[in-house]
Image 1: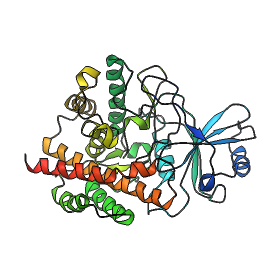
Image 2: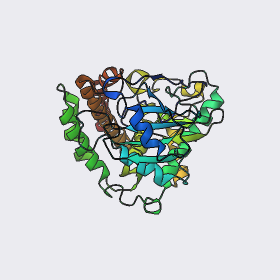
Image 3: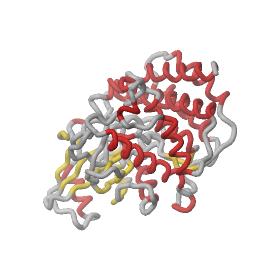
Image 4: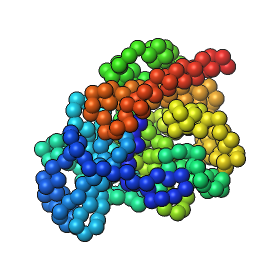
Amino acid sequence: MGADASKGARPTSGAGGGSARLREAGGSLALDTARLGEYLAARLPELRLPLQVSLFEGGQSNPTYLLGDAGGRRWVLRRKPPGRLLPSAHAVDREYRVMSALAGSEVPVPRMRLLCTDESVIGTMFYVMDWVEGRIFFDPRLPGARPGARAELFDAMNRSIAALHRVDPAAVGLGDYGKPGRYVVRQIERWSQQYRASQTEPLEAMEHLMQWLPEHVPEGDEVAVVHGDFRMDNLIFHPVEPRVLAVLDWELSTLGHPLADFAYHCMAWRLGPGQFRGMAGEDLAALGIPSEAEYVAAYCARTGRARVGPEDWEFFLAFNMFRLAAILQGVLARALQGNAASAQALEAGSRARPLAEAAWAQVQRIGAR
């Protein structure tokens, strides 16, 4: 889910973790609870009516709800948002498909229960998955945690993304999940178009990036299942162990270049906390957090990669800053239209400009090498 903080589960309390923030869904995000309960009761035999529904706060993409029944059972529902949407955005059906396909692999995902394409039920397509109890960390610096615990959590995160990129797409039924090859070129084209469709003001840095990036795509290509939004706060960790229980928010997943996916994940080392949940400028050694080079080396060892060329790596980081800026521009446009899933959408969308400027600064550093 691009630039989204809504989750398929919410954390118990823990060092650096948040806690559930729920509210009653109103306005365009309200659901017909009776109609939804009737639909689900016919498909989830264990569900006991009446159904209780709450909306998770936070997040700018697909509205996410906690469902509870009379027996104390819990599930999570994710839907497309109401209103006019950009083409190919908010693909909850793709989220459902990829998580279903990865069940049983080394990639931790929640159990999928059902996909509803009948928009008459709640007004948009949605799916239901199991609630996963655990911790979600919104600050990669992990305030309050011990240095040793931080190192273990980062290692668990590294293990999860490496496991994803080791998956054989055809072996899990995802051989046709995206177009093979030219992923980065197609992504630049896609996010340039999405940016144009959601543009609210001129951003000079984006204009420069849309011209420079297509002309400097690294040679060579690789194909893997990519998440598209893999970052710490899209993971549910075990309540007490340094282990990932579920990777969430697969809306942007497809077949693509694994290094592009991994570089997006590693932007946390290049961006500051005020830019987008980053940790640039922090004393990582004192915190017990691996350096960028150490983290990349661990990923390479787990995926059987000898190394990552420095120029290619810097390009992938610039590309992902551009891509994130385009995503945040879409968040801003939805916020101004009044159909974003979060009250914080306007603030998140306002980061599009500084992210674009950071991406262009990254390009200029590449040129100076």
